[in-house]
Length: 414
Image 1: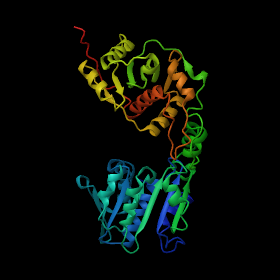
Image 2: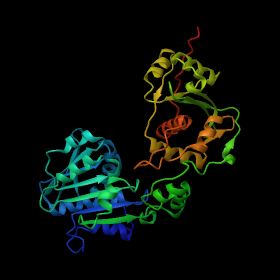
Image 3: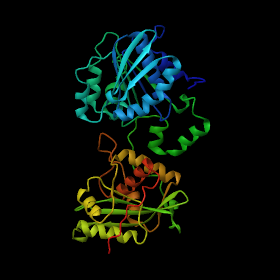
Image 4: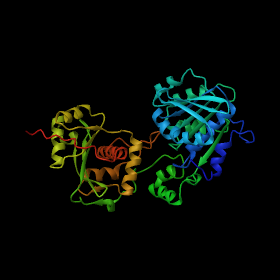
């Protein structure tokens, strides 16, 4: 892997620990900013070079939201660069560590995932000479603080990178705002700090977001979204159903006391259309429906077009079982709300999905779907969001596996 140049911000992140740097005595570094701004790989290179320059026979840690994500986002892009530099790397994937050797020195780098509060126990008891935390804002505070506490070797340092979240986020409050008192170097990255991005790609990223999402993902600001979530959506973005769709899918948000919302989607020329929908509010109607009745409504909504995938609210265990009894394989949806909202906003703006005019309940909800400003983190109001949830399930599943799963429908009428 070749690098033609580095930006000034990247060079500062690469060299801040060197003997000639004015920041050499700092205990930590934080790099935040825009998405795709070149901070992750740059920090990884700097971290390993620092470790191999300063230590021999010590243990270090790479930490991410999960071991899989830190391997995918940090280690896999980093390994060919380390090889090009001249490091020898022996990775033991089953043990989640790698040994790095250079000029007679060898250090071990462990991989840890900060999935939830229990993750702190995985790193507890270790002695580390350094830790790098990739996407630190996504990790539990207990895990981050436990990892930092493990850095007890003389000369140890801590490395953090992240994309911005809410300005009320604990990491922003306790680390970024207090960087000076914590003897920490804070660097803010812009899209232009990544020399590998062309002007065309940078322009595309800037066109993908609006409002507070633009401020966060393009400008790299720690802002709390306000107002309508899909504030760019208007009547001009509605459409009529296309003829002759080549694939079909169903997305389901299931409720008993709460409303249930099903969306039926059709694929035409690379675009998914929400063709029609089913929406039932048991409180409004005065009667709850059984799982078997909801399965019947789902089949009725599909008509003669069997979907290649049926994506269902992951908490709807009884409904999923009812579908399976009818020979319908249901995929459990990814219920990461913020990720789903970001993906859905991108899909709507780019035209990857379109909403047909007959989907009145979704069109009603999309105009009412708002951020809950009373929360200390980003979260939508949990009211009137059932069609929003089923659309979010669909888009997230589509982004993770855009190709059809194959037939999931077995007709048992005989």
